[in-house]
Image (cartoon, rainbow, N blue to C red; front, side, top):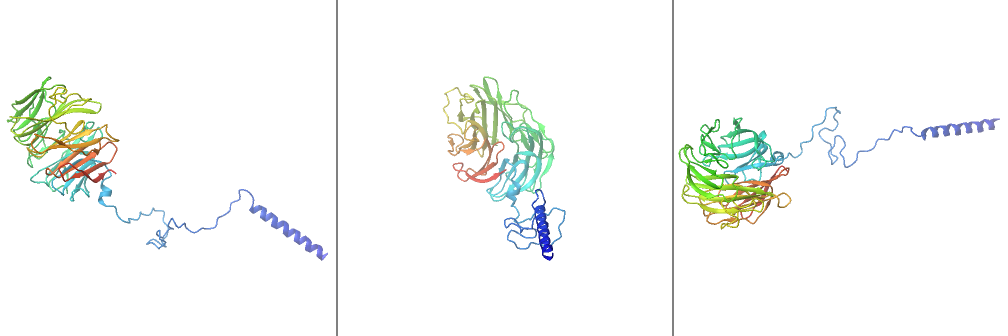
Length: 424
């Protein structure tokens, strides 16, 4: 009997063990995992990646998100250049400004590093600084319809004029609705010009000066009385000059157009000096153009360059094949930058070249008697430049939806070195 009970107890124990094992292996049964140690590649709470305790070790967890570690703070260059730049101006070998979509940045080391000075909502289209008071300047801010200020597809739909008297430490809006032209220059702290508009109170208010009928492009005034304009008479164009603030205009140069004249850009460095870029017809991303110069108030003129193109036809003022002067840079005209009666630079564009277009530079150092085109081609659809003398300058290239790149030359445009990228 005693042996029978022992056998029964043994069988009962075996059955119980089988039941328990079956419950543990039953499909779908939840198994609570054992805690595991933190992975080495991911710091555990309260430690840094090396495993050393951090300042927060042992603290009570909170539902409030923890502030990210400051670590090594980003430099001003990294935090201030998230937007591409489309304007640049230098007043010395070290000091300059760049502007773009919603910002103005400042450099004091020639463009190697930049600090943000101003944040806004529009695009900074251009700058103007006084040569004798380089801390006094203006910036034109506009929201653009196209890819960038100064580009053919861009035009301001809303604009304002900013002003600084301390090198940009403070920028203030002095005109919230400044419908100005494509260029602004000031001859004093009070008197400035943009096309045929003039201000006598530092940019707060602008009045219009009379211009000739059938004007091509914008007029250019270099004083409150002296101004220049190009007039398109159809088959003939004229360069006209005023000495009485636009009340009367006198033709000082006349030439058959040769093809089509669609516009003109005029720049001047003093009352006797005038450079005229004539814009011809366009086609196949090409635009024909020519450049003229007078250093004696229009008495004598030099044909400096003439660019006839397959898409745009003859250069203005020339018949096909009659060009006897050098070609300019690119196959479309870019910015014209005269520095004196002797020295002028001009940018040229080739928007269909390369992956994102090409920009090149040409120049004269002898009033237009000869012309040199630089051999270096820089990637970009458009560009703006700033020179402080005939050797030292900066070139800012940009293309739609791509970073803009700042280059520098110290040999008059022969070689350009990359300095900085905005918007990268």
